[in-house]
Amino acid sequence: MRRAFGMIQVIFFMVIISTILAIAMKYATITIKQTSDIYIKEQAELFLQSSIELALLGIQGHNRKSQGLLKEINITSDDKRFISNINISKYYIFGGSNVDRNVSIQTEKSHGTIMLEVTVETNNTHPKNPRAIRVTRRTLQRP
Image (cartoon, rainbow, N blue to C red; front, top):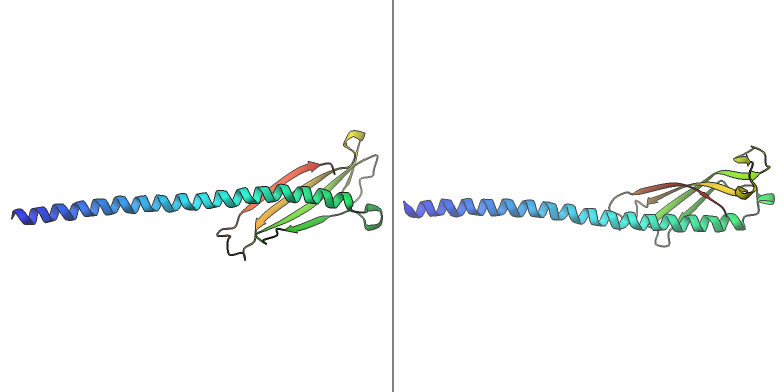
Protein backbone atom coordinates (compact mmCIF):
# COMPACT_ATOMS: atom_id res chain seq x y z
CA MET A 1 0.00 0.00 0.00
CA ARG A 2 2.84 2.32 0.76
CA ARG A 3 4.44 1.99 -2.74
CA ALA A 4 1.18 2.83 -4.52
CA PHE A 5 0.81 6.00 -2.49
CA GLY A 6 4.35 7.08 -3.52
CA MET A 7 3.52 6.46 -7.19
CA ILE A 8 0.46 8.76 -6.95
CA GLN A 9 2.63 11.49 -5.44
CA VAL A 10 5.17 11.20 -8.28
CA ILE A 11 2.43 11.39 -10.95
CA PHE A 12 0.86 14.41 -9.23
CA PHE A 13 4.28 16.09 -9.01
CA MET A 14 4.94 15.43 -12.72
CA VAL A 15 1.56 16.94 -13.68
CA ILE A 16 2.31 20.10 -11.68
CA ILE A 17 5.79 20.46 -13.23
CA SER A 18 4.47 19.91 -16.77
CA THR A 19 1.74 22.53 -16.22
CA ILE A 20 4.31 25.07 -15.02
CA LEU A 21 6.55 24.34 -18.02
CA ALA A 22 3.63 24.68 -20.46
CA ILE A 23 2.74 28.10 -19.02
CA ALA A 24 6.39 29.19 -19.19
CA MET A 25 6.63 28.13 -22.85
CA LYS A 26 3.44 30.02 -23.69
CA TYR A 27 4.78 33.25 -22.22
CA ALA A 28 8.16 32.73 -23.89
CA THR A 29 6.56 32.44 -27.34
CA ILE A 30 4.45 35.56 -26.69
CA THR A 31 7.57 37.48 -25.69
CA ILE A 32 9.45 36.36 -28.81
CA LYS A 33 6.56 37.38 -31.05
CA GLN A 34 6.29 40.82 -29.41
CA THR A 35 10.03 41.36 -29.72
CA SER A 36 9.98 40.58 -33.44
CA ASP A 37 6.96 42.85 -33.96
CA ILE A 38 8.71 45.72 -32.16
CA TYR A 39 11.80 45.19 -34.32
CA ILE A 40 9.80 45.26 -37.57
CA LYS A 41 7.83 48.31 -36.42
CA GLU A 42 11.05 50.19 -35.62
CA GLN A 43 12.38 49.33 -39.07
CA ALA A 44 9.14 50.61 -40.61
CA GLU A 45 9.44 53.88 -38.64
CA LEU A 46 13.02 54.37 -39.85
CA PHE A 47 11.97 53.63 -43.44
CA LEU A 48 9.14 56.16 -43.05
CA GLN A 49 11.63 58.87 -42.04
CA SER A 50 13.90 57.96 -44.95
CA SER A 51 11.03 58.01 -47.43
CA ILE A 52 9.98 61.49 -46.24
CA GLU A 53 13.54 62.72 -46.82
CA LEU A 54 13.66 61.09 -50.25
CA ALA A 55 10.27 62.55 -51.18
CA LEU A 56 11.48 66.03 -50.22
CA LEU A 57 14.50 65.58 -52.49
CA GLY A 58 12.21 64.43 -55.30
CA ILE A 59 9.91 67.42 -54.84
CA GLN A 60 12.86 69.83 -54.91
CA GLY A 61 14.09 68.35 -58.19
CA HIS A 62 10.64 68.25 -59.80
CA ASN A 63 9.87 70.92 -62.42
CA ARG A 64 6.40 72.21 -61.48
CA LYS A 65 6.06 74.56 -64.42
CA SER A 66 6.45 72.00 -67.17
CA GLN A 67 5.31 68.80 -65.38
CA GLY A 68 2.70 70.16 -62.97
CA LEU A 69 2.38 69.36 -59.29
CA LEU A 70 3.35 66.01 -57.85
CA LYS A 71 0.44 64.09 -56.38
CA GLU A 72 1.94 60.84 -55.18
CA ILE A 73 5.33 59.22 -54.71
CA ASN A 74 5.81 55.46 -54.21
CA ILE A 75 9.02 54.10 -52.73
CA THR A 76 10.05 50.47 -52.16
CA SER A 77 12.94 49.55 -49.88
CA ASP A 78 16.06 48.00 -51.37
CA ASP A 79 15.30 44.58 -49.86
CA LYS A 80 11.62 44.90 -50.95
CA ARG A 81 10.49 44.49 -47.34
CA PHE A 82 8.62 47.81 -47.02
CA ILE A 83 6.46 49.85 -49.38
CA SER A 84 5.94 53.58 -48.84
CA ASN A 85 3.07 55.57 -50.37
CA ILE A 86 3.45 59.33 -50.07
CA ASN A 87 0.43 61.45 -50.93
CA ILE A 88 1.08 65.18 -51.34
CA SER A 89 -2.28 66.53 -50.28
CA LYS A 90 -1.66 70.31 -50.15
CA TYR A 91 0.80 72.90 -51.39
CA TYR A 92 0.81 76.10 -49.34
CA ILE A 93 1.66 78.98 -51.68
CA PHE A 94 2.01 82.64 -50.66
CA GLY A 95 -0.34 84.74 -52.76
CA GLY A 96 -1.43 81.72 -54.80
CA SER A 97 -4.88 80.55 -55.77
CA ASN A 98 -6.90 77.77 -54.13
CA VAL A 99 -6.78 75.50 -57.18
CA ASP A 100 -5.75 71.83 -57.44
CA ARG A 101 -4.36 71.25 -53.94
CA ASN A 102 -2.89 74.78 -53.76
CA VAL A 103 -3.83 76.65 -50.60
CA SER A 104 -3.29 80.39 -50.50
CA ILE A 105 -1.60 81.58 -47.31
CA GLN A 106 -0.98 85.02 -45.88
CA THR A 107 2.55 84.66 -44.52
CA GLU A 108 5.60 84.58 -46.74
CA LYS A 109 7.58 82.55 -44.18
CA SER A 110 5.43 79.48 -44.85
CA HIS A 111 5.64 79.79 -48.64
CA GLY A 112 6.31 76.42 -50.28
CA THR A 113 5.24 74.27 -47.34
CA ILE A 114 3.59 70.98 -48.27
CA MET A 115 1.40 68.52 -46.39
CA LEU A 116 2.48 64.92 -46.77
CA GLU A 117 0.45 61.85 -45.85
CA VAL A 118 2.92 58.99 -45.60
CA THR A 119 1.97 55.33 -45.22
CA VAL A 120 4.53 52.56 -44.83
CA GLU A 121 3.39 48.94 -45.04
CA THR A 122 5.22 45.65 -44.91
CA ASN A 123 5.32 43.73 -48.15
CA ASN A 124 3.15 40.63 -47.63
CA THR A 125 5.07 38.60 -50.20
CA HIS A 126 8.41 39.01 -48.42
CA PRO A 127 9.36 35.86 -46.46
CA LYS A 128 10.88 37.79 -43.52
CA ASN A 129 7.62 39.61 -42.71
CA PRO A 130 5.60 37.38 -40.38
CA ARG A 131 2.79 39.90 -39.86
CA ALA A 132 1.46 42.95 -41.65
CA ILE A 133 2.48 46.24 -40.06
CA ARG A 134 1.27 49.65 -41.20
CA VAL A 135 2.66 52.99 -40.02
CA THR A 136 0.97 56.25 -41.03
CA ARG A 137 2.11 59.82 -40.49
CA ARG A 138 0.83 63.21 -41.61
CA THR A 139 3.45 65.93 -41.63
CA LEU A 140 4.09 69.49 -42.82
CA GLN A 141 7.44 69.89 -44.56
CA ARG A 142 9.26 72.60 -46.38
CA PRO A 143 11.32 71.30 -49.33
